[in-house]
Image 1 (cartoon, rainbow, N blue to C red):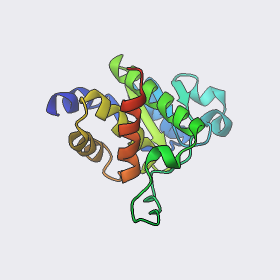
Image 2: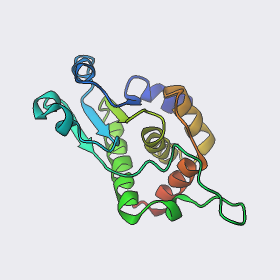
Image 3: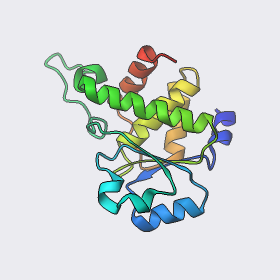
Image 4: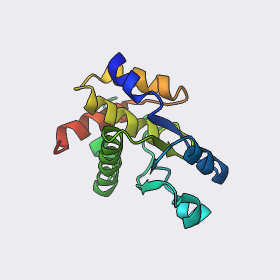
Length: 169
């Protein structure tokens, strides 16, 4: 874990929806890539000019990660495949793919959702799980280190398992 954590130090940041001032600060600090999973378009909020200096990638899927899944009648929790629609799983996969490309290319990346609690940490968890060869405990620990506010739920872990099992990587 330490080798990957060291490599990602300063390369990947996980956070919440940035303000227009935050975008300028990210650019000044060398951030080149934004991965937006907040469910709202930054260009719609701030305009094209505010994001022109950054490589912006936006993906739209429901936040099924911040709340524990409602148990079924037998007491078990449904997995990600049962909760998320096919389109939302596709958007989630695209976000993970983009994050993996950005990190592999050594692009300083800011990954964010609205509050930095559910979607962004779940995308990061999935990418790290994939990079770490299926080590979910260390991937979870690394996300928690990078974003202490992250809420990693069973749905987050189920999404990571689903992605690795179904990705073409």
